[in-house]
Image (cartoon, rainbow, N blue to C red):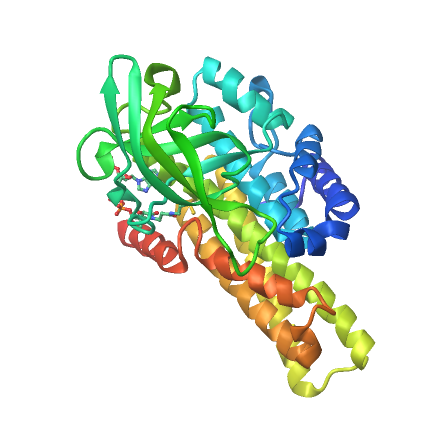
Length: 375
Ligand code: COS
């Protein structure tokens, strides 16, 4: 592996950093207090050509590498982790569309997502009874001529209040993982509605909702993304890439905590006692190890090599490291660390869910162990 970041990747990193520092970081605390979904800022970020970074140029995307994408999410997450997850999910949706959609679907759904005409895209897989065991999902689709009729409920859907396109997994071909198809749903489709907004411990400037499909009718031939029964593979493939995004988000949160910790310690007392030195050294070492795992997974994906297991390692390690780093940063700052004097209490609340969504740490370990046993 070449550890150098290319000039093109550096350029993306610099642009994301500049945007994040100028337009996002100054507002992050207020957005979270007011649970404000920063729609117009997300539009401006897309207009900079930074959403859907890995979508090839011939499809209207920036054609950047996954490494560049990971670096950009790290920058965003240092400024506002809620914005980072919204962009990461939209970018995952954009990549799914770029890989599996038809030219007509590109025009209708991908192009507006890349240009910021849609504020976001949503990935609708999880259900009240189907989280880690995604293959047990129950949302159904019946076919009536050219119409697909969807019934069911999705839960924990990021950006559902603002998305212009929903990638939805439905059961239309019997039981098990081979009974699942992927379709595209527009918020205007009859029978589609957005339900309860979750009242979350963190990431409060992102929207997380349930979706209801009550005889939701879609023109099925125009909206199929997979062959009948071919949807589960699309979900797994997308999540492999998505996990690089979540790892990068967690890394950015931890990096922001380290930055705030250093400033806080300098303001408080200027020096560390022995045990504190050991703690901070270990935190930084783990952060750098996580960085290596994330970029390695991204590099493998860019080089079209198997990366599922590496992405799972990066996700489990980076998200758990971020939680440890934020916890310990609060500990090192003492009671002040628990107040809004520093952003670390927010970062601690924001990072918990990164060990859960897009596959819990336990799921990542299943993926890693299965890959090991196959080797
Ligand atoms: N890429 C492509 N295809 C994959 C794949 C991957 N990474 N992983 C599995 N598949 C395919 C398998 O090859 C298999 O295909 P065939 O039916 O053609 O044989 C099919 O998918 C089923 O695979 P498997 O039997 O391994 O599926 P499981 O139901 O055992 O899945 C886990 C197990 C836990 C890995 C899966 O359910 C999972 O990732 N769950 C977490 C879901 C998640 O992240 N949810 C969060 C949603 S967003 S917040």
